Image (cartoon, rainbow, N blue to C red; front, side, top):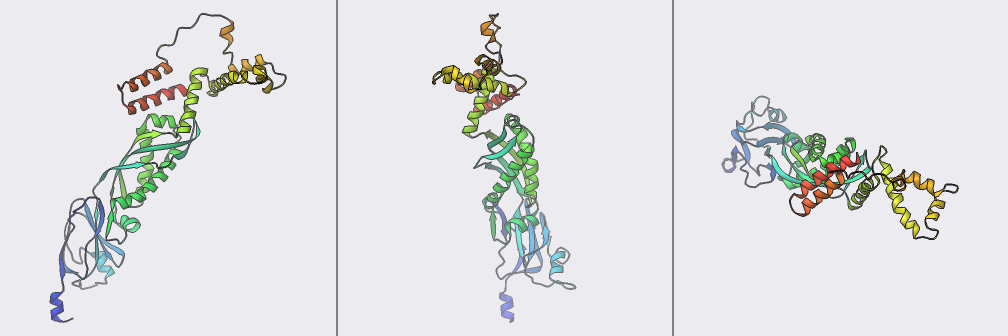
Length: 343
């Protein structure tokens, strides 16, 4: 190399990143044909970390501060470059900066219902929505597993991957929690806590720390909500007992009798269909559990229960219709009452 070329060659004295746009998580310092001067300065600001990479291999990592570059401050790079006795100057190395600021108010949701096992309903398909926040905690892992050697890596790109991790972790957490869906729906903080632990572990494998996680709403698909409403209606009309399905059986039988009366054979046909040799009276007595007995033997009518769960549900709906409470308050209170009703 001639002296003219040497003089024209540019050397880097200061390496730093002035973050000019929001949402950038990783940025490669533009080296081009430039080389780093021996004794050059690396400036890493608060909420940043810097990584030296030699031919794709991670070397030294720097936290916030001003660092003078030498064999003492670049021990791993010195080893990779075989600088046994003398620090070669100038030298080349890729330098990547990482933003460690907390990325707040990031929205998440289930584009498709998640199917989970449930103690009360066997299988439930759940939709949920909420917010979370995160930050880069380990630039080595983040570089190795996600960002790689790209010149720029943004928040939107990493969140494409985080959504898949979030859905898989949520399904696993809820499926193994053994907490009934009604309990979690009534207490969304409980659901968030259940998911956050497993999700934090999953994020950590990629050098990302989960800062906050909350569940804003939980819902069932329409057909499943209709089935739940029917079960609730059965409990209200048929009464509850030690066996939770007794009320449902009574309700279904009570609905079947007027339909059978419209068909050929009438109610008698219903008795025949239920089994030859069994009288209609026995069938109705067993199915209804003696529910018609009070009509045969007159007795003093019991005083209506004050503030029953059904009455409280109706009052709650009235408050919502009048705009006296929010939809969130209505959903939370409704779930609590349903939990008490179903047991």
